[in-house]
Length: 330
Image (tube, rainbow, N blue to C red; front, top):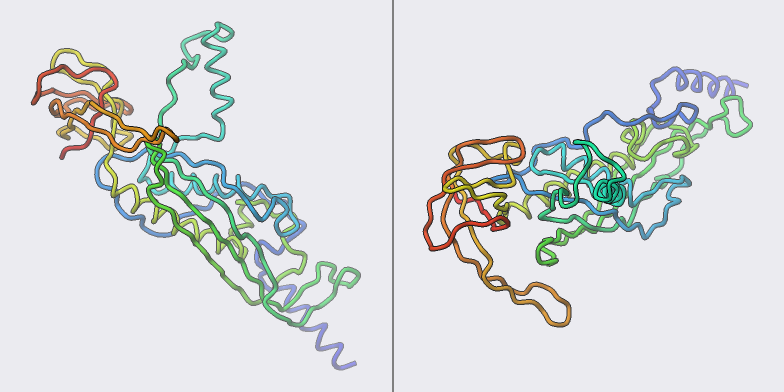
């Protein structure tokens, strides 16, 4: 009788204590307003690189942890958000590209009209594509403990003094879209564990990437892995050269397809280059080598959000043309 009283007293104390948000199965999860990044991301010299995130493969399947989560798509979306939060990149969306292309085709065929109609050829190209796979995304109890109640107990939810783990694994590739070459490939593994009071009901009612998700061991492990992924991607693209293109040449004034949004500013110097020779693999079509000639330089004088212009000084014969490359020369 005394033992029963002690258990009841302990249960009352536990029920009145603060319970982690992820343990509340009855509540409906909502879209997360929490930032994913928790630290400073390595600097990327020069203008921002444009990146796109492809949907990740998920070899673990979509029914992880007894949920109906789309793990591959969810992790890719969270990585795109984290890259945007870093303010080191211009992140372009590829998940909605089929719908965007449909809108452009409708405009091109006169099905939709007006000044807001999207035009073919206006999709911003990505210099790097981030692709990968989710190789692990799971939770596990980390040991025993005292459970109070149960499915038919007076406390219903099954309050327990147990620990749980979150395990995630990503394989990530950074691909140069001009050559399809893999610039960098790396693996990330995280396992985080928590001990304390929690409900044994699992992740039912928790949305992948929602507010309650980030308060779980799996959410903690995912955030840690995404932070490392963004750092590694920033370090990778920092070693590559930024490239833009000439939009228009009007006498000595040259317009380029990047501006303040890309981090360009008045006084920046850009080199204008033209590809003179491209060698490709006859079997795969992969670009093996390119030869480029530097035509001259631009000193930027006018900056708009998505376009910039400046004064051109030639160093070789030939006038810049639409589509010629521009690289950062500061």
